[in-house]
Length: 319
Image (cartoon, rainbow, N blue to C red; front, side, top):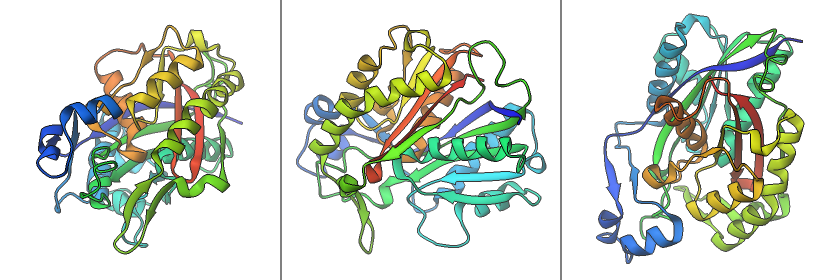
């Protein structure tokens, strides 16, 4: 079977920025309270004229342009999202239409915060099985639409955005120095704790058991992330970057430390973007690459976790 690799990235965020001081005028909170508890300073919030598929299409177009590919070169579109309001057409179908694609397979994947890493693994599997040759994998969420703006414990977390990756078949991807182009996925969940993160109701609203999620993430996830590295044949100290789901700086920093990635750049996009759910990992990685903070070919750990108390991670070589 041929392997696969990520060849290009792209991201998009709405222009409107909501600061902690802005939130303090809406609910009983403050910049100090938010910063000390979650590390977030700002988040981008889309307006009514910026639906999820539009944000996803902007990020996808940027990734395609960086890859030097056109819409007709893509034969699989996967969009990870948990904020699609309509059942059909899917976000993937709408993105394909916005970008003027030919006849790609289109599919949405809803695993909330670990959606992108699930989708990336799915694209890799499809390519290895010969069912696709070039995939556009997008994480996009508009969390502002499902935020409870009266709940200071959750509304301060959320932001909107999209991140995208172009994944292509590469017969030599598994043999190159630095590990496989896209390493084996390690994924799973804790079904009995699935209610700890919820998007429920009509209209849907985001809610979570913050302390339960914090304890689970900081104690249970580091050994799982180290197993992701083992499956890829990479020692944690050899990682060039670690891009965890951008949930909360108080989760990201201790988890990264416990993984043992002592030489890696740690993505901290949550400070400027908030928790963007499925968009957070590809958006954070795209920014690191755009700023030149991670060398091309360096091994990068991607690790998503959250809703459903699900998780998925893989080591990729940086495009």
